[in-house]
Length: 232
Ligand SMILES: NC(=O)c1ccc[n+]([C@@H]2O[C@H](COP(=O)([O-])OP(=O)(O)OC[C@H]3O[C@@H](n4cnc5c(N)ncnc54)[C@H](OP(=O)(O)O)[C@@H]3O)[C@@H](O)[C@H]2O)c1
Image 1 (cartoon, rainbow, N blue to C red):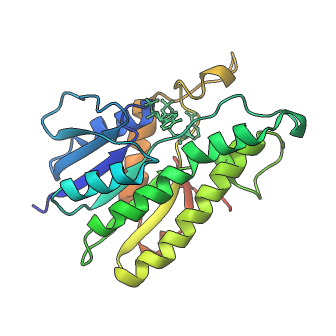
Image 2 (cartoon, rainbow, N blue to C red; image 1 turned 60 degrees about the vertical axis):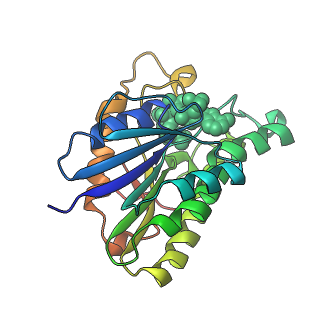
């Protein structure tokens, strides 16, 4: 059986950790590299924990060079939603930059240092957790300027990467994912009493199914947990 290597960035987060554990259940997995800011251990013999600073190029360069193997899948699950703006009056340059530093720039820098580790001669997948609210067409409510913009920008980065990487490997598939509304540290301040939320484990299971199902025709698109395309 062909075995595969996966790198997951943001493994200290609820969805990132659940994805590491979800993938570690399957027989075709050789190694899951779990990257976080703390290097937290996830207690599975298939999972190797690594510490990295997502916005520090030296740290990313060092980690990519020390991995010593080719990768089949790269998943990025880093993100934050802090004090989202109800109105443009709430916006500040600092808040805007904070959102880009956590929701957009890490994926671009991880791509710079880790895309070269993906195989060139077989199907590979690179995906980052975006959000439905990053869709410009789907924006019915306004507000949340900096979070929405950081995820829209992330979607554009993914689209660009999907074009560039196809030139190196026609079997490369790069896409964005919306995990659903999941009960995590990120969503907790915005949860409503009568609404149901996915567990991180349920979301990770659905996301793995979506990732498994992707083929070349999906390159550059954004998909929700239920495999439906989200408009740009
Ligand atoms: N939960 C939802 O309902 C929902 C909905 C739509 C999209 N998403 C997206 O799903 C992804 C995962 O979110 P989650 O719900 O699993 O949240 P979470 O449990 O809060 O995990 C967030 C992850 O991002 C990292 N992170 C947070 N702030 C950071 C910063 N300033 N710099 C670097 N890393 C930082 C965290 O690292 P530390 O542990 O080191 O802080 C953690 O690994 C995010 O991209 C989010 O936008 C979530």
